[in-house]
Image (cartoon, rainbow, N blue to C red; front, side):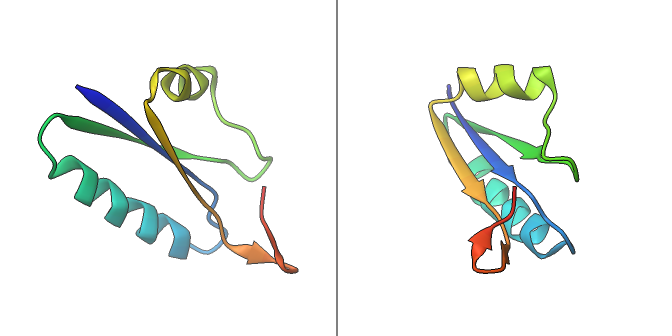
Length: 72
């Protein structure tokens, strides 16, 4: 089974909604599972999340833009 991770930061919840939509699409595909990994307010993820990223065959990043750049 292939593993895809969606890593995101969301300040007001909009990027969370987008990430959940992507996860729904991935999970409807046979032979593919997905992880949803949220970056916290300090820009950190857990050690378990790092391990999930290491085991993933694909990583999708999501972020709002602040001052013309991606957050965290």
